Image 1 (cartoon, rainbow, N blue to C red):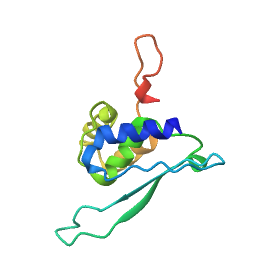
Image 2 (image 1 turned 60 degrees about the vertical axis):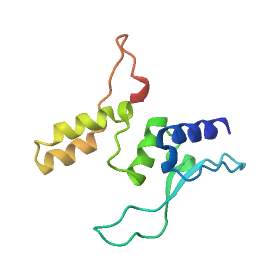
Image 3 (image 1 turned 120 degrees about the horizontal axis):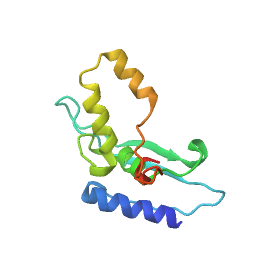
Image 4 (image 1 turned 135 degrees about the vertical axis):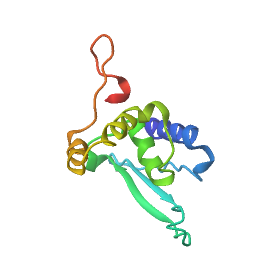
Length: 130
């Protein structure tokens, strides 16, 4: 329950009024899912589409809990894809800059390689890169 409340607080502090509600629903049996219901932006100058519901995270399917930065990126990618998340997007910006001058084959292979990991001066992995 504390983890769910923490994630809710982080999302509210990041997205503010872009979120209409965060609901914590108690359950038993290790259930932890994050669902997002939103109204997508207008599609190609057309009318707004109705509500869209997407499962962002399922603990049993993914094998654990999301990192806060990953959760913020998942929410952002649906409600405001152009939004910059600052430090949480540091690696995303680097990948975009590197891929601008590459061919499609190089871009696709870069995506499958994973995210670059930054290390602290003492050699440990950066907290946000885990």
